[in-house]
Length: 129
Image 1 (cartoon, rainbow, N blue to C red):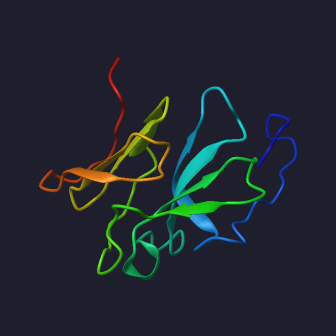
Image 2 (image 1 turned 90 degrees about the horizontal axis):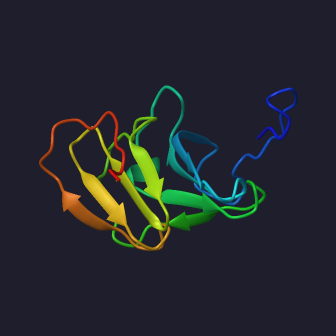
């Protein structure tokens, strides 16, 4: 994490979560300390950790992380969430995967629902005004 326009970096590795790597990241517009990440195995294997899809949230700039899984596949899931495929608008978050799944949360990631699971590969996602 950087607080000085990338002049210096702080390690905010996810010591209390499933992984230290995440490709898709969304930051709250009104709170730079609140962010969500879709953790993955590594930069070369960006699949869900142990086949269980989750989103992790920090409310304190990365000092601690909460793993959010309610409503997400918890086994045999090898979805990849690309960098621009996780988005937020207020309390709502959405993400799409390379296997065509689309998930929505209306409570900052606490719970998720499947919106569609027959889409083509999702590269990018954004809420419309």
